[in-house]
Length: 435
Image 1: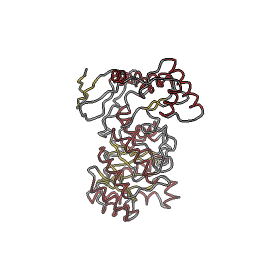
Image 2: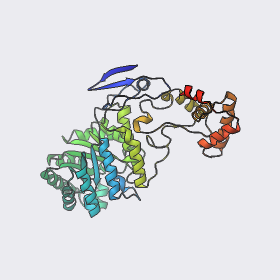
Image 3: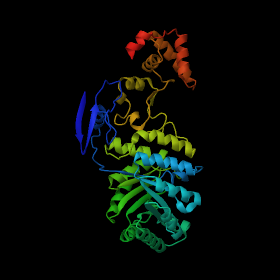
Image 4: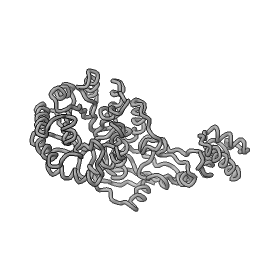
């Protein structure tokens, strides 16, 4: 049975199938499908999904992400990651810091010439930086300067007046070239408010296209950051972008708070890599906007897992198993109660509005100490066994004992336990009926 429903400007076809099977889409849509039952379940408690009208994605994996201690992307690494980001529909790719080296300049230049999306180059408020970025052929130059007193005095060894003048001069040079200009008052969340607004008004008058508000040291909280973005918006007609760090684990929440407050775009990195504890995560931000806010980002979310795996490999930074969206445990179930519920209907112990298929992942039933009989029975049947209830109980006991010793229970272990318990294999006729 299908339900043809209109949602805004797009039409989505929802196919309802048996509860234990996945919902499949036989028609390519402009955004990933969400299970009808899942949406109803979600809206039963939190039914407001109109806080965000649109949300753009500015990826900084190749710039801030590469600043992770010990991470260094090669020319080929950058080209490969940029190509996937481009194919996925990422709105802006910050390809690097062109003045940093000849190799960096070449990588930024080649990414700018080979991608369809907007490519951005970073530049300090220094003539050489800006000229290198412009020469690289990027469509956007992102220039920045510290505005907090601690960084002005102890890092730049300058004055507020010098900072403001450099900001204006740099913005004017970029605007004069016809290139899109983004300006960042670095360490904005630790900057004196009056001075911050003074600088924002000055670069706005100079013609800046985008103002990025960075939580450089990750000290913002969602409520405070939202209020800050609302105040900044009242002092500029430039578009607002946000850049949040994860020192307190609030980067993605703060990015979303900024979007709720009226920012157009958030800077994110794949797997949350970046300086210190990293940035707001590309995958978390995109899927929160798509699934929780029900807003179309235009991103092909089905390639998120693929992208994450490649960045993990190239960055040499392992992705924790419990990492949201892309961790090995994100759609895995071991607990007996959870596994039994998911076997019956995946919405029971998963968000419902986000499925593994939406991010190019697979659901897994993991064998271990907490495994229950439902999961064991399902896995045994998948391996061609026809166990009785008593045999399922016996095999489950073996799985639990083995897992309690902190050992991984593999498929081979499961088959060995089944054979030792005398579980018969299904006949070909039974297998055909089951299929």
